[in-house]
View (cartoon, rainbow, N blue to C red):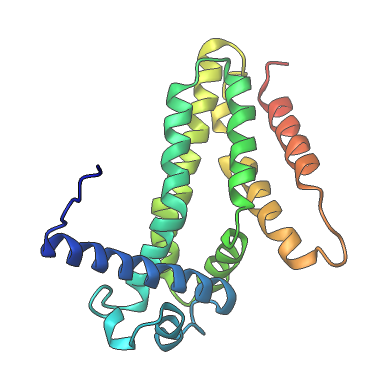
Length: 211
């Protein structure tokens, strides 16, 4: 006979609050990805989430804070998983770099992420605080992780001395480019992302290896 577990009223309220918060974030992700930051209205987020507009302000005091919550929910898990993967990898630096960039390409193709990237890049000039947040929480940690892999390769003799002085933007930019290409140009020039990622990784390894 199964045992009935009674959840205290306070626990139920917390669950309901968390569910409503998640619903707001999910709705905001769709609105930001399709409308952009400027055009997104909290009224529309509320309608999509099935709540009143005033309810949003019980959880987020501005559209900027809501955007930050969307980024945390959407991108932080991938960022943190990448750190754990790199720290726990036991193969060579070249194998690690290959696996890391494959994971990065795959992750950046996830639903809504290309649209989010385009939105951030398009809104950066008008909302510098958003671009700063995105840089500090997503881009900079990702760059530091790539540099960590390269320095591991230098220490093992796989990569040439001074390889870590290459601008990491050179290595990261094709990931961003690939993530947004098909969203913009798939109807006229579709990109085979698996082949694209493979060629990108080959290019990086040729640039890093000892001559």
